[in-house]
Every structure is written in structure tokens, then in C-alpha cells.
Image (spheres, helix red, strand yellow):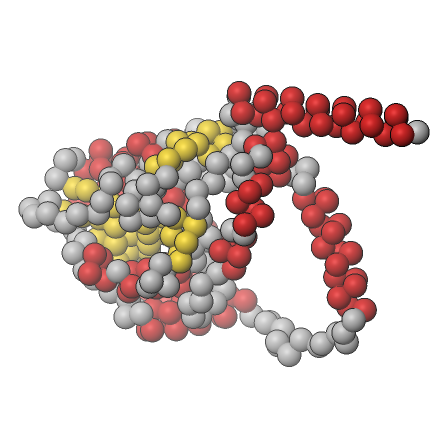
Length: 317
């Protein structure tokens, strides 16, 4: 029995050793940069990180990212403002962050190519940002954003209006000493990325929650049930734009109108909020506009959106 157990342990170790070598040789693992919360309470990536973001168990999609000195994925090392050039700020979540494509083929770069050399597009994309995060970023670094000629804010109505005030997220709690150590074991990163670790962690969480419930009385939630989600999101939008002094002249919302209720679109129109609808062009495209294994825009999708943004900017000249 002891010999059998020893042999089993040896085989398991050999399996993981071989898996580790294969994952490293073929770069099957996803390399996520390190996060941090700066002194202005803005969550960003640590500066000067460069690697590859991998999606799928067979490298179905690989993107080369490059975090600049400001903490965002960009071709530019710094976000300097120099006359007489014009500047566009592109603010949003993972769709703007662009880890799903090489950084030099980003949405911002496509907009630049459409507009010419006199325009620079500075990208402020971070996975998980919602409208509260985005407006807080703009206010915290208003010394930079006040120099921008246009600020394009990507917003998804169904996801980005779930709260009416900014609080830094719990994403930073995921960056623990254990998780940082685990990142060095690429086979674990790979297994986690393809979903094989999730059942184990969920089972452990259920067991721990059972013990926790046994040691304390269950508290009833005092949070009322939201009956009208649309109305709540619209109200959250109103609160946020009032709180942060939304600049209607400079800012423009990048939206998929098909995801927005009519009452929200009517509110934007009646209150003179500028917006760009990209949903129709993506839906009408004869070619795919999203990645096969991911909802993010593919090269064609980014090109269509870049042309819409460029068309909007030209209309303001």
C-alpha cells in the first residue's frame, strides 16, 4: 500500500512537471499584470509591465499588452500634451483596455490612423471599470483630461450603471501573497484559465460557508428588491453625472443603442448628452465583429467603431 501511494505521488508530480514545461514552452498561460490603488484612489495597472494575454486552452486568441508609465495599455509611454496637436481620451473597461489584441492594433490606434497624424488618442481602459470608475478617474486626473479636446466614454447600459457612487472595487483583494506566488506556477494559471480550478474552489467555498453558517445566525437582507431596473440605472446615471460635473461639451458616450431603453435615449437627447451609436454598424456588418471565443470586438469590429468615432470628431471641426 505504501509503495502504491509513493508511486501515485511520483506520477502526479511527473504529470504536473510535464504540464508545467508544456505550458511554458508553448506559452499557453495568461499573464495578468499587477494591479494597485494609487494615492488618488484610482485603480490601475502597475506601470511598465509587458507580456501576453492568452484566451482559450489552445491559444485561440493572444494579445500583446504594454502598460505605460501611467498604468494603462498603450503605445505611448507617457500622456504628454503638446500644442498644436489635438487629443482624444478614450475611457472604458476591457473593451477599451484591449488585452485581446496587440496594443499597436488597438481601437485608439485605429482612430488615429483614420484621423491622421495631427490627432493623438490616449487610452484609459481597465477591465471592470463602470461609469462610476470612469468619472472618478476623469475627476481625479482632471489636470490631464482638461487638456483633451474630446473624451470618449464607452458605457454599456446593462452593466455600467449598477451603482450611484464610487467605491474602489474588491478586485484588489484578489491580489494576495498566495495568488502572486501561484502566478509563478504556470500550470496552475493555465488550469485556472480553462476552468478546471473553479469546481475545486467553489466546493471549498461551499464547505467553508456551511461551517460559517453553523457558527452564526443568518441575517436577513434589508436591501429592498429593485422592481424597475431601467429606472434605477437611469437614476444612477443622473446622480453620477451631477456629482462629477459631467462636461457635455467635451464628453461623448460610446453606446450600443440596442442595449439602451427608449427612456434612457430620450433622456440623453432631451438633456443634450452627446453619444455615438456603434451597435447598428456592428449588427449590419457582413463580417463577424467579435472574437470567436470572446465577446470583445475583433479587428473588424474595432475598425468599424474607429470609423464612427473619427466621423464624429471630424463633424466637430
